[in-house]
Image (tube, rainbow, N blue to C red; front, side, top):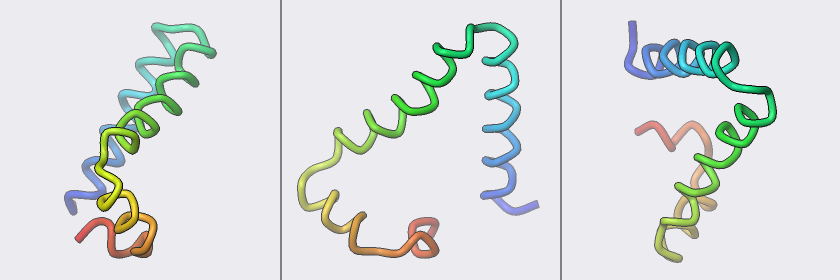
Length: 60
């Protein structure tokens, strides 16, 4: 199994556990908030580079 597949399976597992433990609005806040917070921690040059590359190149 590839690394990206392992990450995807882990993400689904964590999502299902969160749905079981927390209310739906809290899960939605976590699912949206974590990537937004990670994006905001990048430098402006890193944000430009991330916007410039395609999705296929992000995993390299």
